[in-house]
Image 1 (tube, rainbow, N blue to C red):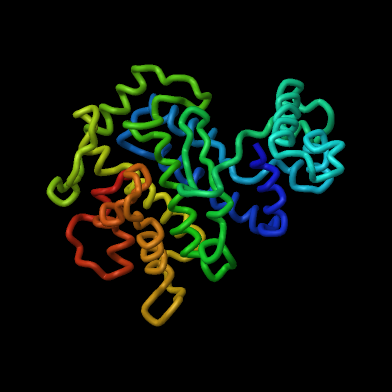
Image 2 (image 1 turned 120 degrees about the vertical axis):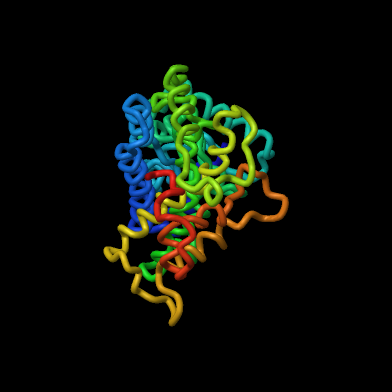
Length: 327
């Protein structure tokens, strides 16, 4: 219940406006890259292509409190009725909580008609979970990626010298959730307006992804199969979410460099391309006992990824761009 109050007090001093704008710009870049790649996908037909692009372009990101709660005046307006006439500390926690809950219910019922601050609080969605992993979570019904402010911290999102780490850490984690919007085994059942997708659209998408045969089945085939529709199981396991997420994150990273040769160096043997891939695999390495929902198969994401091969001078096992999703 006090979620936005705590976050609103923390954000202004910890995350200056320039840093908030940089994070928002990174998330927007990933969304734009996804929409552009889907729109250009030759093997995807017009019906589902239009649906997918609209969904990505309509996707929202929830991370910061509403602007009206980022000022002292706005907070005072929003929460004044929660704590009014409390002049002592003798009130029990239960009574204080009950009073705050009643004030919150009134704000929701009346739409926060009392002040701008109350209106902001009344219209705000529940804040992202900031106290535990995962820091990124996609809600298919709301078509929204929730991001914890804890994810926008050093060393992955501070200063211009950590560009590769920023895109491989925060950018990739965001992309991993974004691609769930069109994962055949997941939230693809909802459209950009949170309505159920027509069965014919779903069937067309599942048929197309099942027919996307990699050029070299031995090198590209998934080692595991996803439970569910046998038509989409193996290829869903092969692609989602690791492969398309890596392609998106790297595309945005590459564009941010303004260079395509990755010549900037963090050390004698580490250019930014290498730092990007090393960071991606370290940051997304699953913790012991973590749920499969939050695991990331780095090997699968980079095994046949041409930029990775070039960055580390790996042998060319398969014709470039034959094992990816967005090609």
